[in-house]
Image (tube, rainbow, N blue to C red; front, side):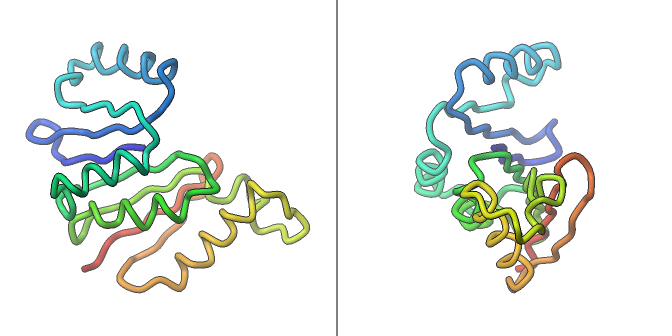
Length: 146
C-alpha cells in the first residue's frame, strides 16, 4: 500500500507492508532510482500503520493512494485511506474484479465475497468520482470530491 505526495521532487511516499522479503526488493529499485530518501517504509500491518499516521495529523494531505492488499480488508483500507486524500486526490485499488470472477455470482469463496461487497458499496458511495480500468485484474479509481 502506498500513500504519495506528488510531485515526487517536492513530496514523499509512505509505503506500508509486512513482508521483509518484498520490501527488500522494492528498496533495491528505490535505490537504483535515487528516490530512497523520499520513501518511508513502514513494516507492520497496514491498518496499524495508517492509524498511527492519522494520529500524526497526516489526514487530507496526500495526492494519491494505491492499495494492493488483503482483499478481506479492502473496505477497511479504503475507508481509512480516503481520510488521507486531499480533495481531488486519487485512490487506485488493484485486483478489484479478479478477471471478472467477482461479478460471477456462482463464485462464492471467502476471498471474493468481500471484494464483491466492496465494489457494490463504492458505486453507492457519495463524494467520489469512480471508474474502472480493465487492465490486469482490474483497477478501481476513486477521486475524492470533497
